[in-house]
Length: 296
Length: 219
Ligand SMILES: Nc1ncnc2c1ncn2[C@@H]1O[C@H](COP(=O)(O)OP(=O)(O)OP(=O)(O)O)[C@@H](O)[C@H]1O
Ligand SMILES: [Mg+2]
Image (cartoon, rainbow over all chains, first blue to last red; front, side, top):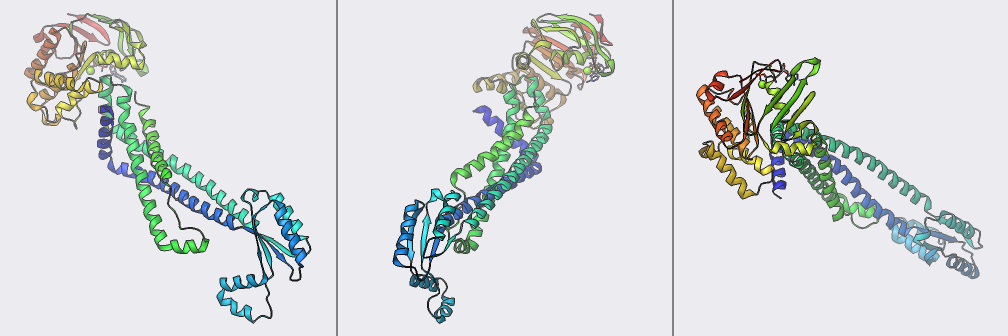
């Protein structure tokens, strides 16, 4: 305990002596963790949007206007018997028109001027979450449905969902690469600052060695210095991230919710915040240890 | 206590700092190392501090061959030593008290004992009234007394001093030597390197004269 106190008081004094370099290291760490945090926030929210959209992804079976009640019944049974749907819902021509009017009030007057109702009746089928990935089964189902009497067309929005997922995955990989590079840069910067500090503490280290101080005692201050820098960097990054996030949400949050149809945007969950803080300290610790290891 | 058995030390380009030197210093001895500049005095002390190892021969202290110590054993060995240098090697950003207390602290002495012992040695070198001063606020003689207090705070078995009076005038030098004599009187082995022959004469102790890394004279 007393040793820890010594490590950290030495580290603070040493950082203060080299404060401009220390600030540089802290900012570097902060930038690295800021980018990491930025990707995490983006990922958290995209994840939610994607899952919400997937939730509402459905397969529409459009029916011929002249489809018979028998045909309707067999289509319904076919959907029910496929084992793929979690929910299905019949939308009549009138209901389709009403929905269109509700969604697009400006265009509704035009539609009203048309002779008759141009919207087909349909079954809206909600696919079960667990079969959404099973492309083959869903494709087979779509083909089978298309061929049924009374069915005009089957519409399934899988393409763009797959594409969206690919984009999210790609972003995650790119983000990962950038974050790893920034983390390395941050650790290296810390190591440099600690090395600088080591030079300014050379006398002290020499005396420590001459009196036979344990290695931990000689090295502790370096590691403490790294941890302090890393922690400060992480804190700075989190503050900047939170400030940026809440400012943007205040300004654009409502628009984003409307555009995506999702819930309101969220910041990082507490455990992730804690991990970022610890991550910064770990980076700093590594940087400090790299230098400390050479001291014997 | 200290046994050098035909040790040599060469640096790059085959320069011999020490050459085939054999020397024995017993427990409780007070020995001056003297000789002209470049004779090898500092080199011998470096080897004794285990900051370096002989290129040839064996240097045995307290029955252990210094070249064979592991890093941890080097630490333990150094804890049994006290060192004093010409340039004092005090930490400028720490007070007199902190400079001395550093040693018992890093060696894990209990806090109450650390304090008592630090006060005790500072009082003994006559600096109890300057404990909160910084080294640069002290005279050379005072700084060297702080360094001596630090060297003995841990009750070393051997004190190694390299030109401890090199920066001091003759009267102060004798004063410092009297401190070493007192330390020695309590049984601590003392080895002092100096080229000040007059000082050696006044202190009147055994001296080993080196020249070109070899023993030129034993007196
Ligand atoms: N690190 C080193 N690298 C190369 N040569 C060295 C080194 N240290 C000492 N020497 C050489 O070793 C020889 C002995 O040096 P040493 O410092 O032991 O002499 P000294 O007796 O202490 O001299 P002085 O009275 O000037 O302090 C000298 O010739 C010196 O140039
Ligand atoms: Mg010398």
